[in-house]
Image 1 (cartoon, helix red, strand yellow):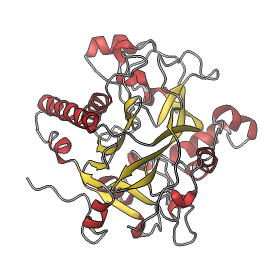
Image 2 (image 1 turned 180 degrees about the vertical axis):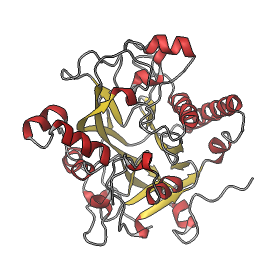
Image 3 (image 1 turned 90 degrees about the horizontal axis):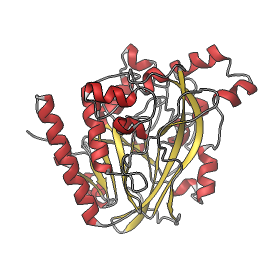
Image 4 (image 1 turned 90 degrees about the vertical axis):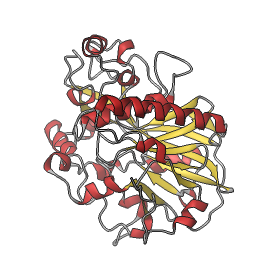
Length: 375
């Protein structure tokens, strides 16, 4: 079977992009080609373990890894923990975070922002717009109760010591709720990050151009409209960004989902929204009511974040791949080094739902000034 280059002809020169340290990881994706689901899971797990060992053996870590709280948001429990819990409260609180990563590749330092959310614009996402109207979140009091803001992206970068012109890439595990025009610009306004490009799977980008009704509820209208083609790098496979960072295809939650892998002093940290908590990746050790029993009754290794369920079998395999690459958390080995981009957190307004273990904000290394080059 022929596998296309991760850099489509006409979009950008593959040789130049390779010089930036972006190279494909074909083995991970090929492991998922069997039509037999059990074999596909087995082969994907084996490929993920081999990739984990390779990244650890390369022994190069990112120079900066920092996750910073942005905004808390209500999210239906029936989505976040699917049908595995026995919690009465219909909503949970998920905490959306920005991930700032600096790494070496191709002889220079690069700055990647993972999951930079323009949450003011993102409120136009149909599901959350209806939720806003239902709860009256437009009032300041209700806003501070249901969706308190801790940082904007601009404030978070200021705290890190990163200037907008330093940002080389932005990326998201998927484009649910995202309006990225503020960052990359559009026909009507310049972007905040003048030198940044979006790293996105081709399938995810294509999905935003032709959504079915169950997808439309979760994508921000016009969120990608008018963004110059020169600001987009479409990927057709899992890729490594140098030796210490990777973007791994993890389809299922959406067809074009991918996960961030970063080698840090705490080991390999893997980030996406396939699961919303450490409990989601280790339900057998969860103290959330119902999860441990559900895992025992069904044999499920993971609990999906299931608001759309575009392909639940793929998402299940993807979560197993994520936790295999991540490995055990050094502080609590019963759980994995999986760091949700939006993490379930305890909240007094939604009682009865408390995660067993949380990763919280993480900070490794120190921000450096990056040398700019034009791709």
